[in-house]
Amino acid sequence: MIQSRLNVLSKHIPPSQGLIMRLRYVIFLILVFSYTFGLIGTAQTQQSTSVRKVVQKIEPRYPELARRMNLGGTVKVTAIVASDGNVKKVEPVGGSPLLVEAAEQAVSQWRFAPGGESKETIELKFVP
Figure 1 (tube, helix red, strand yellow):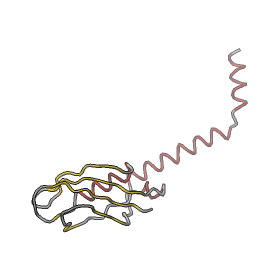
Figure 2 (figure 1 turned 135 degrees about the vertical axis):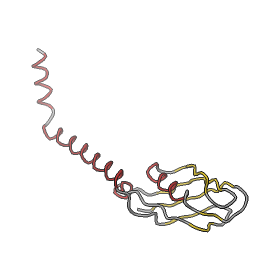
Figure 3 (figure 1 turned 90 degrees about the vertical axis):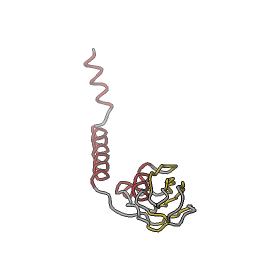
Figure 4 (figure 1 turned 90 degrees about the horizontal axis):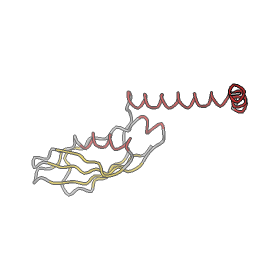
């Protein structure tokens, strides 16, 4: 009786359905591995809403997976800047998780004009 029900169920699922699911899985794995092992590209525009003058800006690398997905948008981070102008810490405020990591890595390398310790809010725009 159970065998006959399984046969009835398998007759209703077309063989192409299993192939489609496997293809989706393979595409997903390819995207994940390409993101993990190859980050190329850059953010096209940047905007800083900081009060302190930026002395050195490092362009963020546009993540390969985001580029393939045609993913763009604005990432907002807060940088805690030491009195010597070096960035001590970068905290994400908003944006796509794929783009936030690239923004954090870039902003952590920025240099600001010397002054008192401060928090600077920075917006980075990623355009695919």
